[in-house]
Length: 188
Length: 188
Image (cartoon, rainbow over all chains, first blue to last red; front, side, top):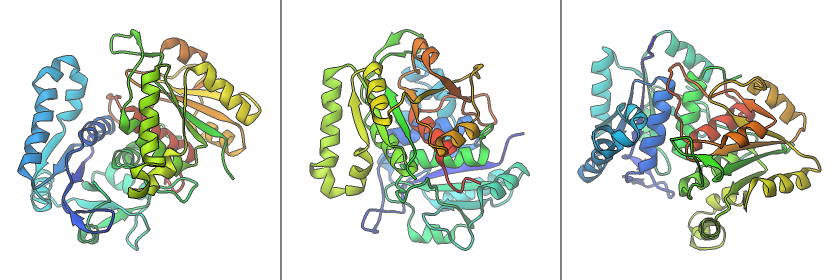
């Protein structure tokens, strides 16, 4: 049964390494890697959020290459993954789109470097996803989502940790691991 | 306690989409993403295997930028991850290096799209790693490791799957997920 789970990669508002709110630019491999993982794990839609028109055009050009251009004949498997991608201008538009799609506002999740009071273990969120509840997971580019976006999320997922104190994964790696923890099969 | 686990990203011999053996080129984000995940999960060394001298020079230039050049002052955290990287020319050299380091030849693992007879569940390999046994995990660039490399591995890990039939992750995503399955903390 398809699950009601969406991902969004947010390019504004995010923070830079000094904690200042910025808008970030297209990273081609974010699009490819996260779309391929989303397709593998059965995510419904992978939303790209950016208010910048030139960046939206660039994303569309990349998508067109793989969906209808030369890339589609070179490697049609890539197009299958990239067909999950939708571009939207801001978080308000994103929330409108997913609410309309599912007929309800989905739970909005973020991953947090430190556990918040409303942190839910992966196991619990997985159960809710498998029970048919709709969820939207936000990932931030640059140095992460702006504080007001984090604060407005419904709940957070536990930080991704290994056995070290180092915790600086790329957003591509973090998204892949979160999908595996929530939707992976045969993980043990 | 540090674990005796190493990763290697193999650029030769790998296969292209027609199954022909080729050598692949540097992808800058392979280096960054896998090094960052390796540092997060406590991997000892991240080996880059390529026989091509121009590619080795390119890798060294990227590493120098982040370890001693401008990148090291811009973002020293990145250098911490990239300090795990070692470049070697071929699999023979890789096996010599890791055997010398651990005083024994580690178990060589690969991930397989289909389960082989010698496939071990992640749980079992994790137990062995935590018990102090040395392991080396090989990842292939391009369309994956050449058949003779796969065949010579000691055992394989189960394929990475979601709830769909699609199974085309980037090597960056696959490596991150394998590390999380073997070495992740708080995954549930």
